[in-house]
Image (cartoon, rainbow, N blue to C red; front, side, top):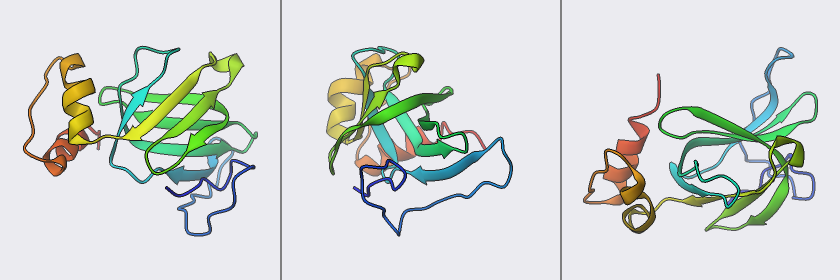
Length: 143
């Protein structure tokens, strides 16, 4: 998994996508995590489950945050650091002033969907393969 360049203790990844904003109200730097769909968990927040278009952002004021779409609404947390990052998971420590806790983002597999997500959805579906599952989640994205 590519390391976000703006989380200081990690090395700079020259190939990561960056969006340099032009006005003061937008993120100064932005990087999207590579997976299409993430399984999101947090012991401190039982309302998280799915993450789409997961982006790491650093605001001009220095605030760092993770932002994602959860199939219903946009979500964002202020980030104090990354406690784990490898090909199977990235864990963010949420700033205490924003509620604290840790948030785990794991690329969603069909196995994870069937075992940990499907039973928690109001309109759960079964999928023949990974691609069909990802397309169904991506269809919830707005415009």
